[in-house]
Length: 265
Ligand code: MG
Ligand code: MG
Image 1 (spheres, helix red, strand yellow):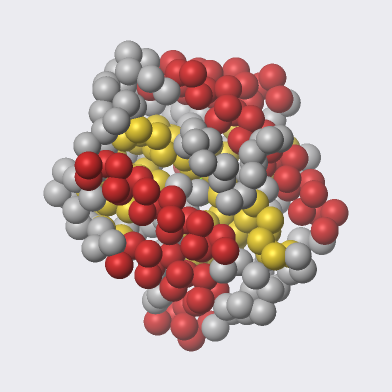
Image 2 (tube, rainbow, N blue to C red; image 1 turned 180 degrees about the horizontal axis):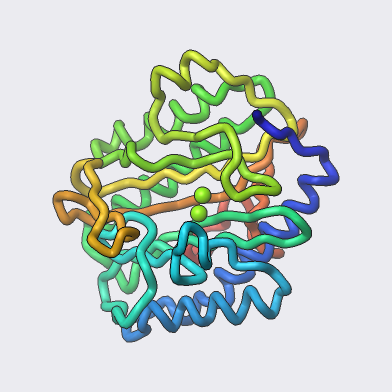
């Protein structure tokens, strides 16, 4: 069942969402060549603790860290560890925080240095796909239209659309109904869900530089591209409101659409 949120509940969700964004700001200086991904995860742990939030990923189905950090051909669910970030890496970081009984969930992707042409394009298209999805999160629109907007950006760029993983409703639970795939599925068409004020979604396209095919490594978590191409993942928690889409996972001073040059947004 889909749980619509009241305006007051959306304000409460924005508190959790802001914590996620503030955590991204806190780790920003570490997203450079030479940093071990475990050091970024430790900084996530410390910031979430300082903010008084709860890291939602730690222990989730046994996940062993506070954040998912996925580098280059890693798509999602990468486990932070002794891997050192190198110049040219494309790194995707996913953070979920609980606060005041609500959840915030956001992923941002970053290039270390200039990156390859393929990395730059993959990241740009992923950000554009997220922006298209968010722009479509307006009352009266349908979920098919929102998902179709994401899909159109990725297909037009002829990049790999990851079909296996989806966005989701979010609220008191991190994963609520409805599922938000990144391409229009028959069941999505059939449900023909109308977007109503109070619907809150984690919109999260994953875009590969090659094909959309992915597989999971033997660690049981890390999802990688089958063709070793790079992958980007961009996610915001977004409320449908009477006034239009409201992005909840922003820090003070951050805007949506992003101010050009805002790192990772
Ligand atoms: Mg996430
Ligand atoms: Mg999510």
